[in-house]
Image (cartoon, rainbow over all chains, first blue to last red; front, side, top):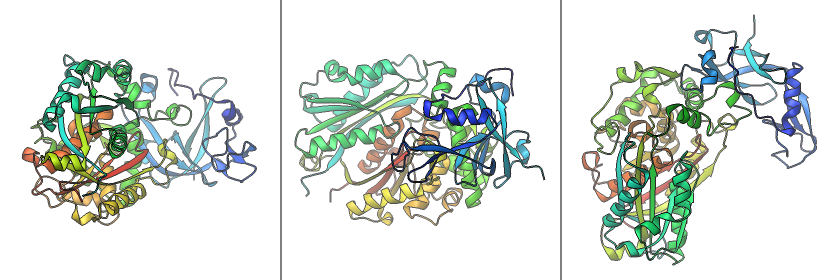
Length: 137
Length: 393
C-alpha cells in the first residue's frame, strides 16, 4: 500500500460489524434471521423482507474472479501511488458478488475464473479493507 | 388518430465544444429560442418548461429549478416548471411529465431545454465528480473504482462471454466516430478514427482505451413537444412518440444480475414496440445511449437485431456504421459526440427527431420512418426505450 492515505469507507452504524470483522480478519456477510437471505452490501433493513432481525455469517474467504479491470489512470489523486490498480468483482461461494482489488499479482497474470482468497490490509488502526489475492497452488 | 400521445415538433442545439466563454445562459437562451422558432410557434404558446438537471453545476440547476427560464424569456403562457434528475435519463423523465400535461389537456406545448458547461470546472474536480458520482462510498469507492473502471469490469466480462476481440470492440468506436465526423454538432466533427487510432490510444482501465472512454464537453439542446392532434393540425414536421417501456436495474453495478442490461433492453423494447404495433424489423434506425461501447452491442442483441453475443460483430462488419444496412446511434453516443452530462440523452432525442424530420444532413438514414431509442442513467441503472415514427398511428 502507498504512503498516501486512500479514502476510507463511509461506515454506517448497521455496517459496523462488517468492519469490526475485517479488523479481526473475518469476512462477515449480513444475514436475515427471518427470511434467511444473505445480504450484500449491509443494510438497515433486509432488502428482501424489510426485517430488522439481522445477524452475520462468516464467509470462507474464498472467491472466484468474475471480472477485472486494470486501472492505469483517471482516479483521484489519493489512489495515484497505487496505480495500476486491479479492480475486481469476485464471487464468494455463499452467492455474494463484491467489489475489491486483487493484490500480490502481476496485472498480466489475472484471468477470469481465477481462484482467490481474502487478504486483509489495514488502512488505519480502525479500518481494514478486504482485498483478494491468487490462491497459491 | 388517437387523442392521446405526443410529438416532437421543434429542436435546437448548440455545437458540443469545450468553450468556457460560452456561458450556461448563452446556451440555454440559444436553444430555447431556436427550438420554439423551429417548431413554428409563438413563445407565449409554451405552457411548461421542464429541464434535465445540469450535473455538477448547482448554481444554474437551482436557477432553472426555481423558474428563471420562463421569466427571462417572457413566456407568458407558462403554467408549470421543474428540473428532473435521473442522470442520463433526465430528458426522458421531462418528456414523460410533458406527456402527462399534454394528454390531460393542461398544456398544448412544452419546452424541454438543457445546458451544460464543464470546461470551466477544474479537471481534477470533474474526475472526482464523475469518478465517484454513481459509486457507493462504502462498497466501491475505497477500492479505486471509477466510472471508467466500472465499465471496464463489465466490458471485460462481455468480451469473455461473447468472444468479442479488442478489434471488434474498437470497431464500435470507429463506427460511432464515423457518424460523429459527419455531425457539425459533435466535438469530433470531421475527426474520424481508425481501428489503430483506438487500439493505440492510452489504456485507461482495461480493456477500455482512452478513445473508448468519454471526453467531457459543453453543450445543450432543446425540444418542443405537443399533442399528436396539434402536430397533425400544424401539418409541419413531427416525430411521434408511439410506444415506451422502462425498467430499473440497480444503482451499483456489482449488484446487477442483468450485467449487460440485456433483460432491461429486451423488456423495454418489447413494451415500446408492442404499444407502437411494430416489430424491431420495422425500425429504420436504432439509437442506443450507453456511453460505453459494449452497450452498443448488448442492446442490439437484446432488441433481437442479432443473436446474443454477435453485437460487436455487426459493428466490426460495418453494418451499423454509415452506409451499413443497420444504421445505429447516428449521433455517435457520448464517445463520439463529447459527453455533456445529463444532456447526452437530449442530443439523442434531437438526433432521432432530425432523422424522422429528414433533416439529419450527411447522416440522414434514407427514408427513415421509424426509430427506436434507449436512454440510460447513472451507471446504466435503468433503460428507457421509446419508439418514434414520422406518422402517428
